[in-house]
Length: 329
Image: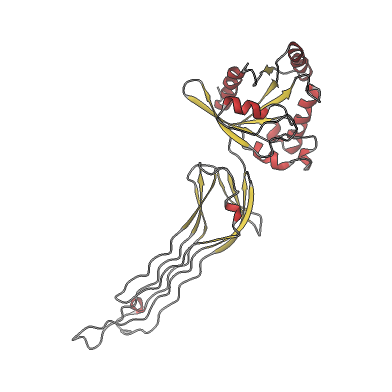
């Protein structure tokens, strides 16, 4: 199951307290102060991981806390530091302060880290207060509390190629044919309710990360259907493949289907509308479908690639064209 938003509390560990202690040795009538400092509290850290693809598990908990530092000991022993709590999140996760809404960090690279809450410093033991004029200090300080914060995580998929189109345009079938991904496929609208990502091999040495994004409907930019939950993920894609169903079973004329998606991208943002885009006539498996693809090409006045994911036709050329756009060739 996919989840692309969650919110929770984080709390770093408290620093350990310093202690008051005096050395006790035979033949040393006045042992000096030897109380050690407390250990530092553990911090809460987010780390972008290529092995995590959803915020589902992370969002199951309402709060996360790192461990406290341990108090100091005699013989100037420093308390053990609290362990940092490292939370792995998907690459492409935006971290926001939930109370104020400001963006703290955009974790777009593998192993990128963000210290969300810093652990408290340990308190000082009485040994650290000793001086020539104060030889037997009887005071120590308490450890400082760790930082606390309420955060909101928003995932935006980081794919090179995004598949867009109306429901049942053939996006999931295409992804399943060119990658090892296994999206759910059926002959009814909104089969795909969450983004699916796969890696396609192109040529002998190159690959493309491709995202199958949930089908748009008219009015998505205003929140209809899956609304901006879909458009959010399109923002990360370098190239868009706009699939248009040209089969006899299509309920929307190809040119109108193309214009609906074009309008929604433009209404969402100018950045989306200006992304490199290839128009793809999907389910092109009959002479009639070929004619509809040609009509679409004339109506929108731009090249239209013909493919049949079911039969495997045109997929190699499509991937090569997409790679050329992604790599800037």
